[in-house]
Image (cartoon, rainbow, N blue to C red):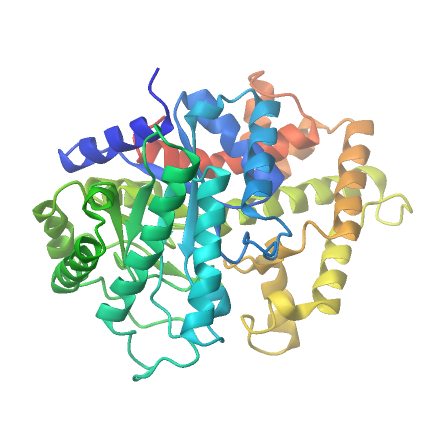
Length: 437
């Protein structure tokens, strides 16, 4: 049986050969999101790519409190629960480099990045995005412009050497890691201000990045590793913000799309593809953006599902009932008491910020669901909805897709199953766009 890494390379080859085949990357640490996406992949009988970022998971715990080995154990625990085969899982590390320590001098930041890469490889991650595009504290140059390509490529090669050495020490005899290069990465979680236009990466910049990076790989004795560089991160012209989305325009990306076929074994990786329509996502795949990242849209769907459940809870139990979960109020309280994850992202007056805390596409609320008080509210919500049978007429009002699924006997009207189904609506869009469903 072919495993996830072999299937990944099959998809890369098929995409380069003109087939509308790709892979979506689930960038989330939310347990319900991961469980729902694993259910979707199981139903599709496809592999699943799950990634953690250098901010989420690092050698110090990141903002999730998990080190690389912890995250691998966490994902495999969920996959076992869903009965999803581990050999069909591909685990990736996103933006791995000095970014979490960019306020330090370059030498110190890169020392941390070396440890980060080493720990990711030791833990069993197989897809590594080498991202060294950021200025460190003592880097010279105009900071309104990108860091010099030679510096970026040299640092990427240095981290790749660490990855290769660690792989040989830890997994001798197994296939080596898959690498992603590229520096033109959209703002994680969406842009803060609406742009007039999102300009795709130029084909000239792609050629320059590939050429300089390959030169530094060869210089570092990494010719074999270069054969496992499968993708390059570029900007295809997509982005989203609080309440806007720039849809993919394939005509503007035409020259970029054609450029990738000039290089052996490479496809594009597209970030910030959240909230694109299914037809736009399929166009991206057809145009060789064969790896599609999705993150905030999945937790946005999770939040929508919980809000829908709470609306039904209030209708069933009565607004003044003391046993209500109070989920929305708890979320607002936690976000106000600890604004670190949203205050630099949500601008405007108090009313506008309050709206964004609930409904922004950038979904900064995703950072708060693991908080103890919110976990308790969610558990109370699920318990209440299990104890009070949901009238199908109410389900039709707040979860119309799930209403039809319940009526057709596809799912039972239990809160967790309803939430997973809601998240799977997003995962299913990506699966179909990638030709996996």
